[in-house]
Length: 561
Image (cartoon, rainbow, N blue to C red; front, side):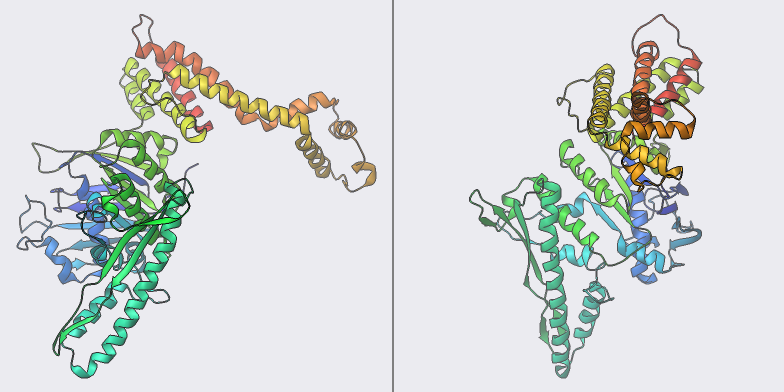
């Protein structure tokens, strides 16, 4: 069933980063999966969205540098001239006619919806995640820089509305011209700020350990994640020359030992592998994101080449978490340069392609602009080949589509694991799926016969719908056979408990029976059509056969959802 997509509706980018010419993106609130090799321009899309949303918390003077050709911090396309207009423009699904535009003159229009979207969203790249553990083995992990740049600009103290970053920046400005008589008042403000930070860190510790155990260690608490506010904001200097000291937020762990006790790990980067460190970094980011107080209508979670250092097993574990925890409430934007990772996520989302936009970026040697095309599903590619009368190529794509549908059903829905690095044929997928459905049908059939509970419930429902009082002792004392005979009289039909039982089984098992029949039909299609396209054969393929095969594969895909 198609979801009501909420999120970014359109993005238009011109003369910003990789986009020289006007580049429109029609997203319509869908999740996005973006593939592109390094240098193809895919990250420019990520930074376009990020830069516009960040502008809601900055002045026009602070953002104009990105569009000023004379600024060393400009993000203009390198082929841009000072006379050409450069901007990022965005619209949202809840009001697509409202356009938010960021250019050299600043953000021309903003409202609470856009501000809330910025505060409720998160943008995480591999570089940012690396900051959680990229420390020498001899050094403690200090997360202050991460809190300062990526957490405090989006979070508020509990029970307050002003952002941590605004509170800190205001205090930093105040102390520059501080006189001696004002010192005590500022120290009281710093004491309140440090107390709020300590409370935030305490809450993160509590939630992070639970999240890590739930999603990364199978529900078993193997580690305690510990953040400590070991050095607080303090006032340093003297009259008219004060400043704030830089705090220290230490990350350490406790590892559960065989005797049930916990051992402190002062420097996790010297003890854990990169997969575990990545999981800990993500845990902290995710917990903070989930705890943000903004109840925004639209929320975005964008991840740019986030998992490049992990193997496919660990990558997909994290993708599962993102899909389970965040996809129901967030618009997901995934960007990757790994084509294998891209294809695997496409396969995992092939049952809901109406909710996803797939984009593929390619570097252009002859143009000053990336080439972008929509990534199509196997069924969409098959349809294109069919329209071009390339019947064999169409059959190959249909075979791929069928394999993907069955593999997704077996692995994701039924937790069937095939031996790693072993080639699995379409026939094996069909055989396994058929076995599972047939066993399910048999199990249901047996439980209904043995208990009779569902059949009794069905009889009672029919009687009540026909105005029969089930509380009447004359009715409640009837056996199933007598109730069935009474129903038969009401319907004007003959009755046997055996026939009524099988009729009931047919009603309750309609979907499973339909799946079983469709799998049989796909088996026939495999032998006649799909194998013909994939293997050498003199037998011709016909357009109508391929059309029929395509429709049946679509039906199977819907049934297995």
